[in-house]
Length: 197
Length: 89
Image (cartoon, rainbow over all chains, first blue to last red; front, side):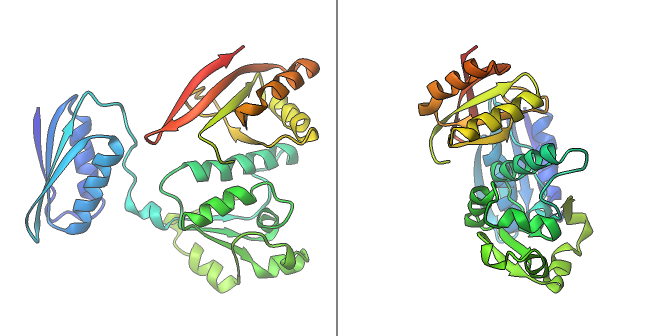
């Protein structure tokens, strides 16, 4: 099977989605995607890479890139994730996840933060406020995971007012201190924010 | 936790997992409570991720306290993919 996807003129993440659809539509064979810019070329290449498929890029000109992806007897692979997820903010407003049982809530929160370290792409920012700031301070069981995320470039921010309220400013173990202006800035894109409370 | 391979211990229920976590904490074991990897079960569940060197201690605690476990697995990553192998029970 050979399919051609002409994604010239399409805005991100459309070229990736079109390519993915074409790849999903064949059991094996070649998908040739044509894009007209560097970023789209990168994103389509990333899709091929993360799916474990061989691919070749042929730059015909500055506005013409041919990406030839060969789908073998491939294993099912990671679904393409739109670029917007890269700027995702996760707001954490409690040291437990959900209501019902505090004991369970603590474990769920630990689980959630561990899972963040295992899932790519990472969010851009984690914002902790109110009871959530206990997670970034001494005694928290998720410090290691948060440090790992920080090393990977995730911004970790704790609300200064909250640290002050709980009198734990000097116990902060990971990330920086922030104020409401920055918090609002991080949260104001509602399509790209998840709140865990 | 920094290592190439880990042990994963799964339980019959969330309550048993919480019980297990308490017991392992009480003996000062270095471990982590994590969501059960999808490769083991797709249902929601908690499991204990531990260093394989501690497997005997883990088994001892399980037997002593009659923890209702589901299985013990070896878990590792290769080329970005998770691999699972059942070790026992």
